[in-house]
Length: 374
Image (cartoon, rainbow, N blue to C red; front, side):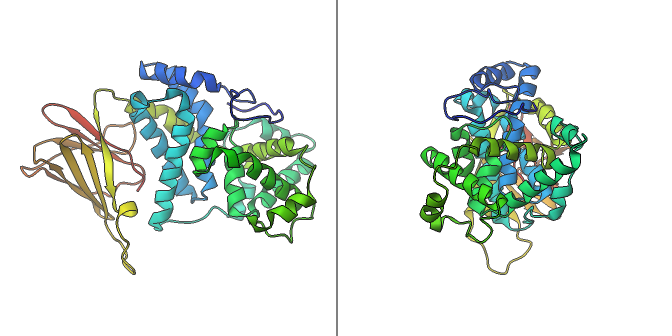
């Protein structure tokens, strides 16, 4: 999965030829093979697209704990919806969009928001020994290490808009503009100019000429005139950022393994109960309220599942009322089964820690709710 370093070129209609194991043209075929039971195809998808998901999550500057949970939720949901994705060849955009929406929900909840502007990030060492890290172990390690750290520090000092865009572009293999658009919710046509502008700003900071300039976009025209014609090394600078991300902020090995194991969640026989109401997104916040329960509603055809999540656990009800076995899932492993009462109600004594879903088994069918980060 680790990319060979090569200058970036155009994005939109080219395959993943600049690094990585997955060619964009093969993504659709890999998805279809995974649907048919090919675990190796699923692993190839994880290896090829994990950096994209991780870059989207990191671009939203969640705390480490929340970033790990969102990453898992995205892959759990991808496995769950694998056979229902209408355009398998656009799986990267599906993953990027899902990651973005999950990040925004976590940010909106405000309960555990801790931006990742921790200076210890610059001293973080990955558990994986990457080719980039091997370079830092060489005789030129001290010089190269200082350059990588300074590049990352200057990147962190950019405005939010540039940080988000460049962090997503750092994914290896590089994402398409369609995937970037899905990750940020911006028009494809605006990505190229914004990319150039942000790389100019970063280059100016590295050259010591941008520290006193504003990093937001209100002075673009003046800035662009000052750096007109100096974009020849933009692709190389982006590759340097990609390498720095591979050293300082790679996809954690344990998360990648969890994503591989998520293939066990692929179940074409289970109906998906889609989330139709989430109080984090859909309810009007109450000023001054603390420890507010999270209210969720899932629907699969005529079956509705209402759930209330608190710090003490969760309780829910299946409607219309019916007896069912309910499992609280926290990953590919089977959860402890609960049984609804005559009114369809059930309780679970522990609050879900991390991503969770519910699996209901009635006398006729199995239903699984959408995965959520709590």
